[in-house]
Image (cartoon, rainbow, N blue to C red; front, side, top):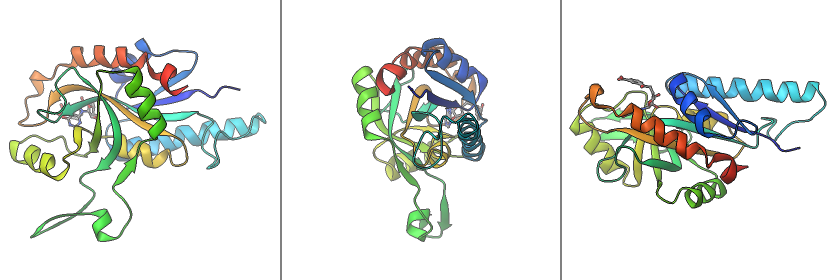
Length: 226
Ligand SMILES: O=C(O)c1cccc(C(=O)CC[C@H]2O[C@@H](n3cnc4c(=O)[nH]cnc43)[C@H](O)[C@@H]2O)c1
């Protein structure tokens, strides 16, 4: 049996954009809400209910962790792009999803949860999925995607993040949460860039362009990840 791919988005408009491009026979697209907490809870619920219904029907679980039954989990949607790294309208393939505000503020600067000794703020995407997606989307920008609960709105924060995460190409609000919930299943983050990271100018977000890029990129999902 071929297991489908689970694609998780924050809002309905992102889900519609993914559905417009993705193979409906193999790609399940669900909306879970904005932010890492909603993303983790929603993804965990989807995986648990899929696993439970598979057990009840005797089809077994989709993975060693009991999650499933999905082939892989993708966090998809729009994102802010780091200036000079991922322009508006481009597509980003996440190599790592990083919880960039999970830690502690100190007079000497921010300490990550790793530095505090309480786990990790960095989750690697599945290398095979990253390669397959970047092969299928040669113009996509590979790099880290930082997950934040607060959208960056000043030049100072944008510059701090760019310095702290030199390999980061985009900022969004869900990837790390989805990755935590996907534990045991292959995971990757796929984003299209709607706005540059920096001073807040919501009216300037290029939503139409970003949703169109997300639809096009989603056409590669099953080919690359199936
Ligand atoms: O208008 C706002 O300020 C606003 C605040 C929160 C969410 C939104 C959305 O449109 C939700 C969609 C989704 O977009 C991702 N996103 C897009 N650009 C950025 C960004 O620059 N920084 C962080 N996240 C961004 C995010 O994943 C949202 O869930 C609008």
